[in-house]
Length: 314
Image (cartoon, rainbow, N blue to C red; front, side):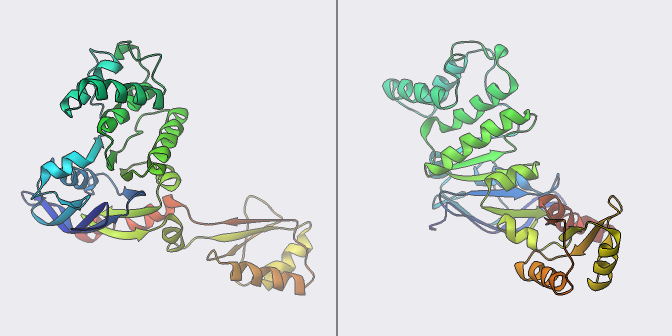
């Protein structure tokens, strides 16, 4: 048993000679969002399928809401909801009928099912379209219904496998707000996504999966600090001041896009910034403008993934 919403240890899965998961360790704390990032084929969806009891692991242990996915799959299924990469709604019936069908599959009584459907239609802003065929729904509306479906039984753990793929920016932000609301109400979320800004927006913790292994795990800020590339951009009022600053600041380079700007390497710490400003102040050099740039999750992704494939090829 475990107190974590999700607790995975040494999870392994192969298909023939293809090793998909090679000793994955992963935890998700209750009431939080953890994002699972990685290139295509890294094993993200396989991990979700194992945790949602759709696929059986070859080795290792996985607990969801304290239930073993192998020994107690029914207990796991009773506690979870899953929204996959592709729409799972029936497009021949209405949104309301889709939700009622799911309620019957989850064995809700007629009264409870009706009340829950009304609640979800309001929560996902689908009241006006509730009795319209899905053929009339936009992509964003269908995706909201996709997310509403697994929530019919109020799961404590929710798996979102690339939930906003193909949505326009407005619809993506709407989905983000819905997920934040669910987490605020205590739902635990494991999110896989190809959108790094989505992970940055939603996840309190990020695990990077590559070559079947977790190659990094931490908060977004912790992962960004692991990647070099941060810098301070200083802009001066005249060329003479810039020339003096360039000589004073070791490692600085001139900005090719601005003749009066200088770039200074910075690891992102306050101490580095203070040291640069102190040296300029001592030399009585005035800065016209200052910008601090730190690595983003794109930098983290490219720095941490792809190494396994390259090592194999070499």
